[in-house]
Image (cartoon, rainbow, N blue to C red; front, side, top):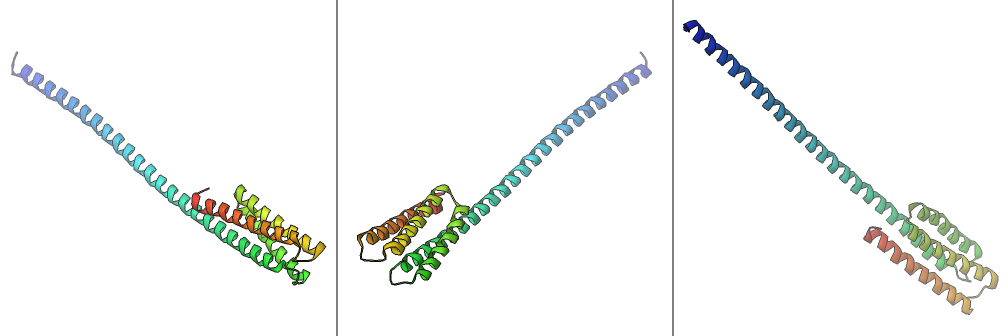
Amino acid sequence: MGELGIALIAAGAALAGSALTGWFTIAAGRRQAAAARYAGDQQARAVIDTVNRTLDEQRAARVEEARRQVYTQFLMAFNEALHLLKPRNPPSARRNGLEKVNTLHSLVDLEGPENVRVAASAMREALLDLAELLDDYGGENTLAYGWEVERCDASRRHFLATTHAVLHGGA
């Protein structure tokens, strides 16, 4: 073998080595690109999850605040109507108080949840029964009047406990 043969073998070996090195470099580059893409996808998913959690928390806070306002308005209307449901007050004033309670009761129905709707309905029914008693029999001195007022107070206590559990217990 002459010098030409040795040079050809050396050139072939160098060429084969370069091709093999190039192939390994390309394969390593592809693996690095895939790993970088995967890491980027994971990071994007984490950012999206964080944004979604933040939006959910903000939405829950808005719902809680809306409920708190509706519950407070309903409770204030109930207290006002109960104060107006006395024989010395004219029937028109008593009706106005009841109308306000009915209007705000509709808002409580919209805001929910079910256990608060039930408690608000019990309050409204107690007021309506008290108003009916006054319209039919008229006096504060009757034993039934005291029972109906106590029923109103009990329904208010139940409503307060229920709304407290919803607002502070996460129901």
